[in-house]
Length: 383
Image 1: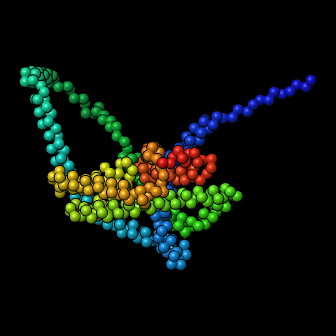
Image 2: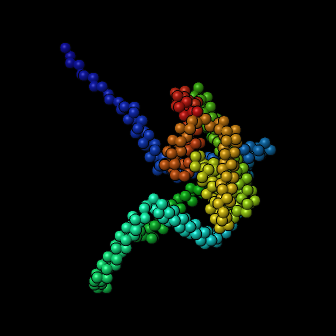
Image 3: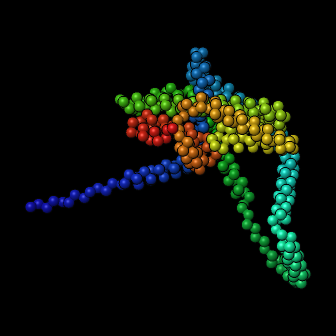
C-alpha cells in the first residue's frame, strides 16, 4: 500500500492580528506623512469652499477651466488684502507689546498680593494665637542660627583662574536655528502647492470623477458613484457651512468689538469667530483674543464679563440654531465617535487634527453607508 504524504495544514494569520498590524501601519503612515496629507486635505476643503463660485461662473457660459482660474485669482487677491490688513494690525500690536507686558505684570502682582493676604487671613483665622507666637519664635531662632553659622564659616579658597573650566549645557544655537528653518521651509514648501492643487481640483473635478468611475464595472460602479456623491455632499455641506458660520461670527464679533472700542477689533473679531467653531474647546478659545486685547484699556471686571457673555451668546446662537440647519443635517455622527475622533486626530496631527477630525470621520461614514459589507460600521459611527 502506497504511503500517503500527510497533508500539512496551512496556518493562516489570525484576523485580529492582521487587523492590529494593518492599523499600526496605517497610523504610522498617517503620522509620517502628516504634512503631505494635511496639505492635501486642506486643499480639498478650500476647493469645496470655492466650488459654488465656480458653478456661478459656469452658469454664465464660462468654461470650467477659465472659471476655476478666475475664482482662484479672486480668492488669492482677497487673501492678499486680508493678509495686508492683518499685517497692519499685527504691526501695531507688536508696538504696543510693552503696555501689554506692563499690564500683565500688574495683574500678576495684584493676584499674588491678594493671594498672600488671603493666606495670611486664613492662617490667623484658624490657627490659635499661642501657636502663631510659638511658630514666630521658632522661625526667629532658626534665622538667627543660620546667620551665626554663615558668619562663622570660613570662605573657601577660590580655585586658580587658569584651572577654571566652565561647561555650559546649552543646545547649539546654530543647530536649533537650522532645525527651525528646516521645519519652516517644509511647511512653506507644502503651502506653496495649495493654490495649484485647488486650481487643478476645481478645473479637473469632472474628469477625475469620470476616471474614478472607470475603475469599476457593473454594480460596483454604481456603488462607487454613490460613495463619491455621498462624500462630496457631506464634505461640501460641512466645509461650506462652517466657513459661512465663521464669516458670520467674525463680522458680528468685529462689529461688537468696534462698538465697545476694543483695540485691534479687525484682527480679534475673525480670530474669535473662527476659533469658536472648534469643537468642545471653541468657546474658551474664542474668549481669549478679546480678553487679552482689552488688557491695556479695560480695568473693571464688568467690562471683561460683558465681552465674555457676548462671545458666549454668539457661540451658543451659532452652534445651537444655525449649525444644525447648515451642517448638522448632513453630518450624522454620534457624540462618542466625535469625541474619540477629535482625540485621535489631535494626538496624531496636533491642532490641525481638531479641524480635520470631523470631516475625515464623516467621510469614512459616507463610505461605510454606501458599501454593503461596511454598513454595520456606518451604523456604529452614526447618530
